[in-house]
Image (tube, rainbow, N blue to C red; front, top):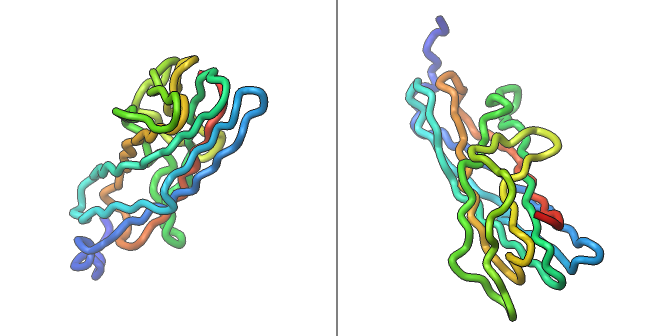
Length: 174
């Protein structure tokens, strides 16, 4: 059994930060696809000696111009780290992606989910995993999706500031 740390009085004040990276690219032949996310997002956990989960929202703006053949979002995340302390590599999961209620831009259309994305989607450290797929003929112009990201905080985590980078990409086709 581990001795209680003098940091316990500060555990309730611990803050976990998450740095988000966003990637976007254009596809050839299907019109331009781009994606943006906020530069940072954060959440905090009052450590109490028990495993906990926190959920934060990650807005994802998708812009799809030209011929509409659908698109899909792929996400990955690095392991939460604070110096030599880490969370488990599977601590982050996308528990859902909320489709927008409205879109913007001329001839815009709301995305209709397609494919076989089953939530929760654990964010791997490499390669990425599909988190949303828009059907052919949907998701044109600008749509803002919201990914709900759950982070599992282990009971034995040390107090401090932890960071992780989430990368979201978009590709043509459902």
